[in-house]
Length: 294
Image (cartoon, one colour):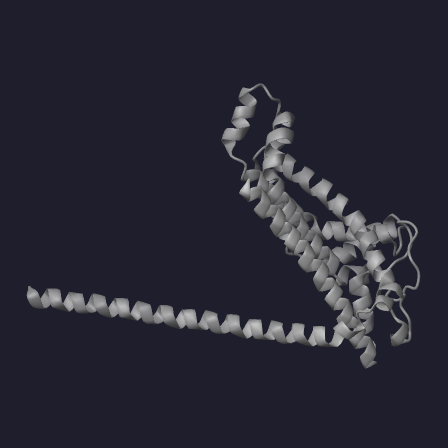
């Protein structure tokens, strides 16, 4: 009996030691991968900042694109990006949140809604170039918008729309049922409950997911190339049907040039793009933390 108990105890200790050893190995692998990835990111950021920071001058922000690197600037790209996002944000937000409200609050749970939900989730992972082809077919050719702000803005809105819908749905699902039942108990209608109870509670999740989706739209290049957005623009758009360029397109143009100075200008443009993305992500985190504190 004692020998049997001792053998079982030794086997248990051996198993525990083996599990601890495996845990240390796996932890070491993950730590190594994290350190390796961090080193790569730090090296890339250092190279971009060291190359682009000297070019971040006032003239760089005020000048238009030029064939001479010492005279080239990013003004048209920055203004064009703002024009494009003024189309992307309201279009994707209104359609995305509206679709999420319908699917979560009004639509019946049947095979059709499950099929729609599955396809929305799948669209969130479709390569961006596919949305570019869709925008080229619908907005450029069918509607005749050409390579305008509307064509690019609607194409980018389609790109981020599935992400906005999914984020809004998750935020709406997180609303406690007790709040909605209490609203109904007080005699509120379906829409009054959605407008005064569901949406205010879901705002942090909707805003966070939407801002992250919009930050993706700012940095995408492939859909703009497919739609036919020019890379060299030396003027500012005056309307939504005008031609324009955007930050990713300007950076793409500079990186394709053989001159080293243009590559440095591209690094400066990347710094600006990274700053915008970091700012948008910071706003998303701030909104989430503020509402969670409440």
